Image 1 (tube, rainbow, N blue to C red):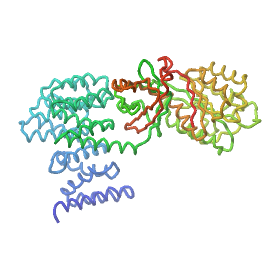
Image 2: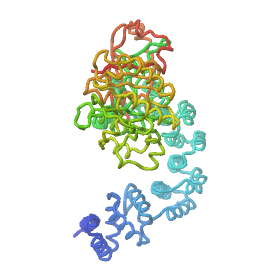
Image 3: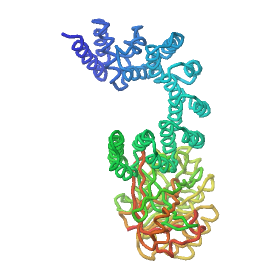
Image 4: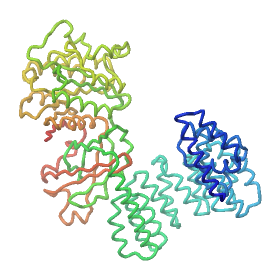
Length: 630
């Protein structure tokens, strides 16, 4: 049997032993020890290959400990004859995860290599050590070698060191100084090391590097600018495609492919028609990469866009205001400007600005829903599902309180019905902490239980006005922005059609500084007084929807409170001259968001020229929102 066959056979046995840990840990340990003692040299080589391909588990951790008993482990990981650099890095990470630290041994090896005579062979060894050390090294480790590495005669070593040290230390000032290095390789590596760091700090360095005479330095800077979310990078990359130097054009095609931005497909398709040789092949590769990413994005989680306003015209620029949500919930504030795309009447917009409308530091949300008692009433089920979706969007520190009101014709009332004494949840949820917080909680698990458990009848308020009063009384015990969501049921219409009841509700909301959001079945004009009251506050809203639109309607209103965005843009001058400017009376705006968080797309009709030309103040934040969903 050949050596490779022996190695492969032993690797299969080791893999089987690791997998057996889930069923019988002692048997798995015994088998690994037997294999290690049978042929230590072959076991060592096979074990490294298995560990490099294994996921973290009890079995893989025991294998690390078994291999670590052999003092050759760190030496073997630095030997290209034993394993590849990728395998060595994987094993090093697995060892660190299992508590076996190899950093000190690698650091000693690097120190010895740097002290030796510079040669192609020593440079190759240093590069191997750098790659493996990068898998676990901390900032202090790199500090000890910065001077020697950046002074090493080999340019590849210096550039690799600049990249790895920059990524590890995240020291923007240190990385920026690498732009003063005479070697373009080091400058290009420095630009790559800046990718993903804070945009405000890195932009000056990107802008300086764009003036370089080296194509890779410029391409890395342009790509870094794009990755930081700066939309001007798209124009810079398009301009690089027209550079007189073919090396710059080749680097531009590569950088465009790395953006994986589908807006570049049309640019690359046109470029491909006239490109030749390496440029033509590079264009094909870039387009393939973008299409692969677009395909995977379609299979990812879906974002949801909730339009807050139709496209409005202010100071010569079109403005879109919308909210984003996704399920399960994620923090959407980190979406970059380059991940938004806008078309107006089929024209791709290049001049646009994205702004996250700052949400309140703490949001206090109260929800008042109808109580039927059966638990199977379609309206009540729709409300519960909508609240579950919003709960997945809730930020960590935001507080919720959930109340119910009875929809019976003659609900029972007693002393427990007073707004001061009412406890809204099932007794199983009662805790001293929750009582002290007046039934307001930020705990998603507790709130999920409150939604799932049917509240006893005597916990429901006799009418929605009393339920609102209870909510507002609880709100006054907490700080933060206060929003109350009132779900209107056809059986609550009588209570909220009377001027006296509305006045009580108005007074309660004003006294507690609470903003009202009405959500109701689309029965024309049934709750005109409630609608007017909700919209009397610039931040209030009123949503009329059919039953199957209840979930989306609630999610849209809630998303506006915590993840609202605004895009302002201008059409290209050529489009305006052709009569497709902002004052166009008809057409459509398409908004697309494509990011690592998911994908979403929506089209909205343009308003008439008169409706679009609203004053800037009228299109700003704080406009009451009325929504009618199909």
